[in-house]
Amino acid sequence: MHDKTLTELAAGLATGEFNSRELTQALLARIERLDGDLNSFISVTAEQALEAADRADAARAAGNAGPLTGVPLALKDIFCTEGVKTSAGSRMLDNFIAPYDATVVEKLKAAGTVSLGKTNMDEFAMGSSNENSFFGPVKNPWDRAAVPGGSSGGSAAAVAAGLVPAALGTDTGGSIRQPAAFCGITGLKPTYGRVSRYGIIAYASSLDQAGPMARTAEDCARLLGAVAGHDLRDSTSVARGVPDYTEELDAPLAGLKIGLPREYFGEGLDPAVEGAVREAIRVYASLGATVREVSLPHTHYAIPAYYVIAPAEASSNLSRYDGVRFGHRCEAPADLTDLYKRSRAEGFGEEVKRRILMGTHTLSEGFFDAYYKKAQRVRRLIRQDFLDAFDEVDVLMGPASPTPAFDLGAKKDPVSMYLQDIYTIAINLAGIPGISVPAGFVGGRPVGLQILGTHFAEARLLNVAHQFQQATDWHLRRPALAEETL
Image 1 (spheres, rainbow, N blue to C red):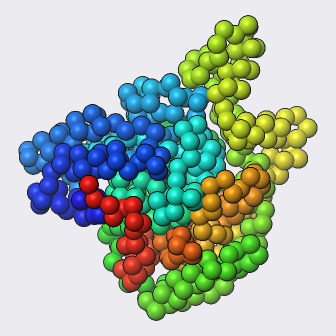
Image 2: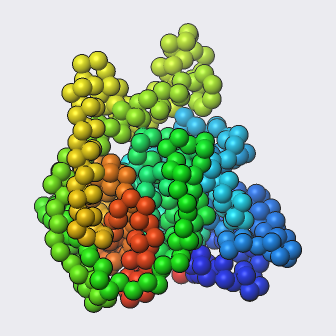
Image 3: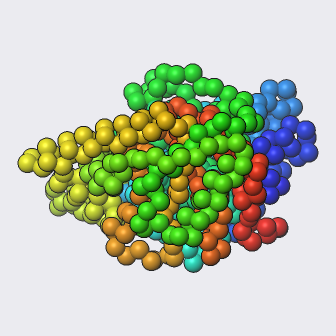
């Protein structure tokens, strides 16, 4: 059962080929056997999962099953889940048991899905390799010497290894698309505001967005339909109807206009990655699409703008972790100031401290206008670049990352790590949707093709990705680990 997609599992449950308890038990056994080396899970909620599976089976027996009833999945450990530890990959929240469900968790429970546990991640979603977790690094199922990408690396690795058919991640600057590319799965970052952020532990509030990670675009379409929608508890949630994202999956691509941003095919891009991406684009041409070069002239400002805006918002959001109300508290503080200082020093990891300091400096008197306000002006220019491009073409395509997955420990310099997100960060600054789909291999490690659309064009992106997957088999390739049976 572990080799089936989410869509195939849903069909098997509907026909009675197996029930949710049998499926859940099989996947829990795989996690117990195989995840010790991968480290993709922080918490495995076996008891709660089996209870949810039994409820799903009872609902199906009563004729009350929905399309996703009984389907198992996993949640990045950044989604508050009632009664379950929600750590955000940090020592600071290692003792935090969430008292409520995030909106997306509520929606998935209402849909009858079964959560198997919480997946590992870079601490507070700050990282591109999943090496910044308090609970240790996650390993890439394709090559355990390599990183799985970050920050949603645990979710990506768990799907790639066949531990779960799908998972939810969050994407602040590429944290769904880059690990999806590194692990050879499909990952979708929706339009900002398409999915509620209520109950997601915040990193950068104007950039964070939850989205699905699965083996296929069809699976992502089904999951997005379950979690998308307006939420009065999130002031940034958009009051807009949710379409059936599966409805247009099979629409032909004849006449599709594809734009290739010249800034995404220049210096720093691994030639072998470029070759795989261009071969994928030739597949689209064979399906009837037309291809032309376009320009996103402010692309080179995206990383500096992002690393002003995101740390500034993180500095504000993470100020709540002071050792007083919840989270890590130091032992025997001498006074309140000592409590604050030592609790935060002990609770946060090095990368989180670095970004808090960067953000605090940016927001301080004398620097706010010079850095933060200027970065926001640049952000508007980047957004306009995309809008101008979408006046000419339907979608944009390029690499999800300049290289395949790199080795664990290879990126010692923070700046070299930040540059891994050069093709993904601008999308978050603009608030548009993007999807990464498997498009080849370099040195035995997966390559991702990134497809971008204008605001709320998720249905179009999923259609374009699905048609590519109907014409190729990259998404069907699986690491040896995923082929292991119990």
